[in-house]
Image 1 (cartoon, one colour):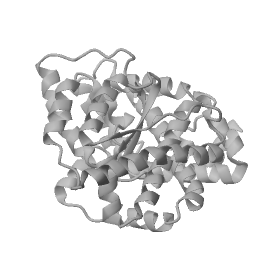
Image 2 (cartoon, one colour):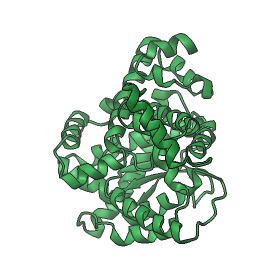
Image 3 (tube, one colour):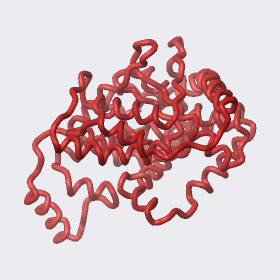
Length: 356
């Protein structure tokens, strides 16, 4: 989650083709060097925030499990509370781990150039991410798969801007991120499924410029692109096989984020006293005007498309749960075949008819 539990997620699998041919060690070094400092806080304030966030991540686990009906009986892991540099280090390890269990360092001039570019992106994102569940990394303390990261300085910065009650805002953030942890912990196959499709998106023979231009020209001549917006652009620039993998990852991300938002709404009123003020302030902040450079960066990394992803996913989950209940909704986690298709996200009744 970036800039909120309901905003732009940093490491989006939709853009993870960037993991190929990147010197991620160099990217992390560049990112740490150019990342902007966080808000000014005393050591006491930061220590207090870190302790409260760690406790909130544990507190959130019970209500999330109760509402979702997932992960009962599993151990409650400890969240890692990090600063911006710590998040950059974690992200630089996670990116190549998306593609393989045993990532190898990239070398060569091209990888270093890409590493410099990726470092700048990591630096920008390190100031926006509040929290993130990373299913591809291993917890350095326990050796278990999956790591929940909470970026303390960013959470403090946003709660100050919103004038939110710190304890409420911190728990609100944790509810969303813990839901992601529960999704993957209760359904381990999701990690492999995502890795398989990310590899399909990033791998394979690259199309020649001629082939890409041919697809663009064909779409222009017909005047009827199959999809609009970012999806349409990706459809033109990728091979059919890559686009299918991209679409599967996009649908899965939409489901995961929409489910987390649904759970946050279901749990919030009973456990976060000021949840209405937090949500109103956050939504207003998210829609506030941004300078041209910020708008450009957001467009390039798909942040605005990510916001739409949350909205569509939540609408899907809301309608299915209202229609059939959470227990039957959880059929969605059975296998790749029970995940919604792109055409079903906006028409949940189609998913209900096909799967249930």
